[in-house]
Image (tube, rainbow, N blue to C red; front, side, top):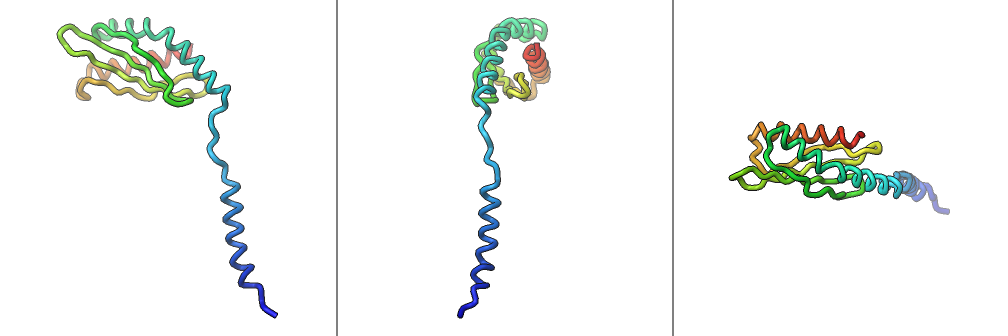
Amino acid sequence: MRNSAPRTTVLIPIAAVACLWMATPAPAAPAPSTERGAKAKLDELKAKLPDLVVEWADREDMGHAWFSRARQISPDEAKITIVLKNAGTPRNVVTVFARFYNGIWVTTHFEASWPTTDQQRNRAAHILLVLIDELAEK
């Protein structure tokens, strides 16, 4: 008669690891209603952005600016593109990134085509992020 204890001793840890692995929840995709809500809120924001961008550019002395586009890049992320043109200078582009959180679009950061050392334009871009956040909350 053989002793089956060594075999049982090996199987118990393997079974425990398998149970823990199967009990670990996988990240869930956003619910379809959230995705629809994000798209609807982005569409609302898109309609208001052209006026906001023109007012911002005038107030911050950024030259001629216009809203180019806003697109979702994932169910809860979007990018907003703004183009600036000053007389005698090449066009600049500001891309604002946003996340859909708690039912509203919230800006997270921006990327710009001007040098990172341009403090006046960087300050104006940060103000733009605040203005977009305020607009999204209305």
